[in-house]
Image (cartoon, rainbow over all chains, first blue to last red; front, side, top):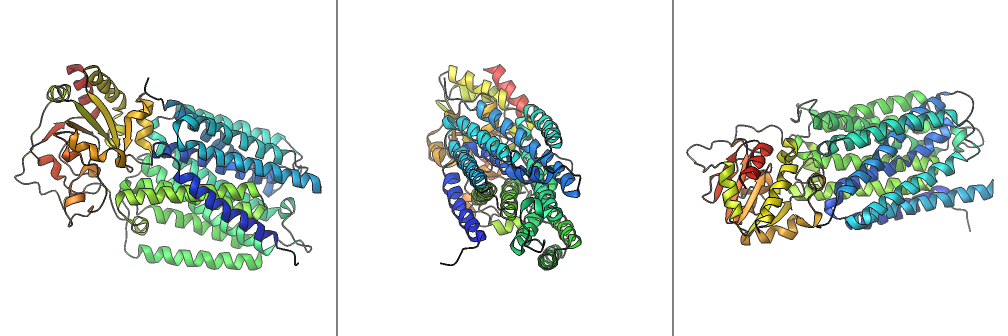
Length: 96
Length: 464
């Protein structure tokens, strides 16, 4: 059998993840659509892993500086996004 | 290397599953808090896995970035007012977009670090395409979100900005960007990359300025979606499965929310994108003429509601602006003490982002099981004594149901007009965001309460 390009594997993951996202998000209760947005925003900051690799090497380079800025921006999002989501979810209480 | 590579991939898989569980948790407020903790755990795993990668050798800058970002992020998140959530989310989206651009730029500058070069040292063709796409979508997300932020924060007017030839200009810029992207994938030149990115920033601004304030829930959802696609594009470039999965989840989440918002306004996604709808009221439809209204005071409202068996409160964006949610909950408490059944009805596009009203009511300690969505509660208005409309307008306009000539015809509305009495809190008779007169104001069973939402509600509380 011929070898499959890694891109095809990634595409497979991507398409399946879209389907997972589709079904999971439709099951989210409309009352929690605002926390849904803030938490999706926080998790999409996992883009920070790309910034970490750019900022990782010892020697100074354009990539390292770009990586540092990207890391800082994503960190704002991660800490801010999860914190504000937790804060909002803490407000949703049942009838006593 | 092979083993550690596999372990890294498995760690990213675990992180992806935790992110899916984080979204899954939001199916009910009961499980949502645990879901958020799964999300945090997934993020921690993804970051730690990357940090122990041998490519990452110096930790000083990383710690500095986390310290600065963490401090800013936490401070903002703890201080932000719930009414300002839409702005905050728009600002957060812009950061994801910018981070995507910067990571793509970094990968272009130092592709060896990401292992995306061929034997000759050139970047792989597929990585160039993905990198270009990620950067372009990221740039559009960034500048579009900044425009949305300035509109929501009131730094610029929420009016749509339209000029002739706008759509042709956007189309032209879009084509030029695609051509530059194609050249970049062939040439791998940083100049082409940054020119394409700069043009994408411009497109981001131009596609958001024609969209009016009333369509902001769609805009925010759409930018949410874009930020996900940008992240996925970068995930492909870096061949990182966690990033691809997350990008796909966020992208489809934002797309579904955009769809729900469009459906709730009976608008097509395309017509929202083309813009020009919903700014400050126009004079076109305000020929109220000889129609007369009944108006009342806070005391009248208190009397009517105290003697009712059931009340449904319909909050809208005006309540958020007036910060009346706490007074409103006090009012509901007093009514419940008097034996009145009190519930809240929420239209999907009430507020400036999906679910905005629910968060504001939760902030004021309104139990979530008293808050109902449109489909759950709409048939109950006919058997309800009083509908108390506070800060909502277009979403109650019977014209959307009854008048085929109305611009909002077909939009699902809350049938407040079917309640025995409608109490309508409003500053004046001015039309809502859609610029359409509301026939409800002139009906016999409607009592207008002309006042600021918060002052009026406090007046009712006093009178009870």
